[in-house]
Length: 181
Image (cartoon, rainbow, N blue to C red; front, top):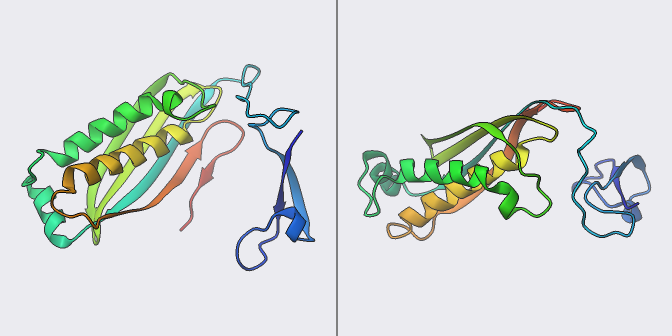
């Protein structure tokens, strides 16, 4: 079985065990089998629980481009609604896009696009009752919504930047988690 070693933060992030003398925990790397080949995790014995996850990301753009998006003055149409629908579709198809990701019976997906100081922020939430979490579905919805926004606005501005795609929270399963910053 392949393992991942968690080490103390030694300044510039977590180091691999071969470079860090202080291993503080050892965890199985769940997506590898005994031979080290990629494998889908068997969740058959796990109980079904209510699972939720929220992810977010940002699209940096000029104030002029953001203003045009917000008033609906973009050549390709209603950018925000198309991005929301793209994010919802992506969450539903996550298992087709991400190798080793389980297909899940999603019960709810919500994708929101809101203005922020430097452009737009996308927040996606997903939920299901199942044997594995929906973190990847929320992250996929966020990422595809951001890519759709970029695609629909690139005629106005090519220098936009997708940033800070990250998991914000998850609940259900063995543990809950919430980003604190």
